[in-house]
Image (tube, rainbow, N blue to C red; front, side, top):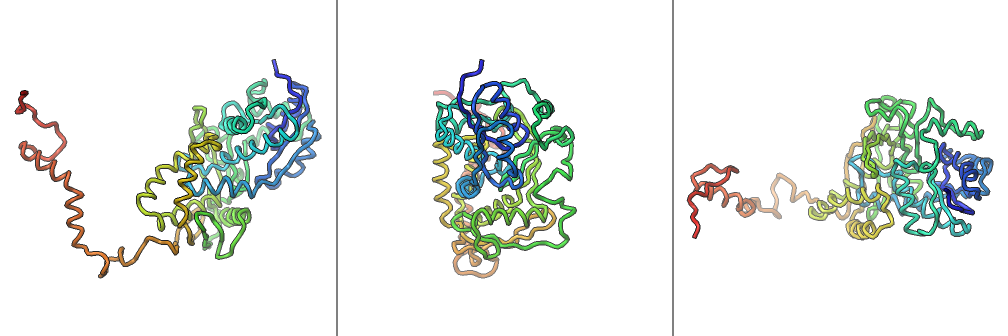
Length: 419
């Protein structure tokens, strides 16, 4: 039996799932529905969204531009952490959900709503990301997740329901991909992608051209950073939103940023996703190259150990947690000298580093050169190697005393006697 709620705020995208949720909520909960959409850079997906929400039964529809907040408070921290999930995924959907859910709770409180709802399936990660955020900011709100309640079991069923209710949708049985787009990326799932042997269809891609269709001439760009934050392209300082949009454009034109990944979902199953992240691919590589230049060895190696954990937290929806905040404090300290410029050649899907420079570079030619130098005496290396290799030397000498060759066989304990 459904709980009695008077007003619910729905995280609304206007896609297939949330389009049918508005009438379903009104039918099954007999409540007022307020739609909420965060503009995170979906472009034309927002066109006519308010009218559609109202036409399908919402009492009102909030649409708010959160792109700047998204880039500066969610993307930049994750970039500075070097967080990449399972070696490929730049977390475009993962860190968008906590921002949407946080603002959704704020609107629910302002509206006097007693419930929040989302269109995430019971098999995916997004339900966790939304609901952990709800718990972090207002655990008293009732959470309605229609995919865990209704009899609809597939996107085909959802399309049929939309037709019955005369709800306009873009998804069809022939084009049934599940997409999530924002200023950072677009993801593609479902349909023929559910078979990991199937290659993505060429016409599926949105932000990037096929490498075969990219220009035959390379594009050279310089990306500037200040304390780990991207600030410029080709020495022109840009605001955060403009910078990401520009790199998406130039990167996409050169087929940069495609990733095809069979990933491990938090709920325990594997899924296949295809992602387009042109700007993110360029920025992650640029940030990595600068860190290689300015971070000392121990700090850089330790930070590389923490990056997968940070990515796992973000992927699993644990954004508003003490651990992520503690990791942010460490990461922020490492970024004080991550300032400089990285030059790239973009060519047919390849993002090639051409050069990097920083006023805080720890690289010194006089130390690295094979030529004559005054600051490093190569004779010192002999003593270093002797000390560094002392444990190996001692072990080998002992084994030789046992009359054995220096390998890892068990020693002969027969000569040892008990007291």
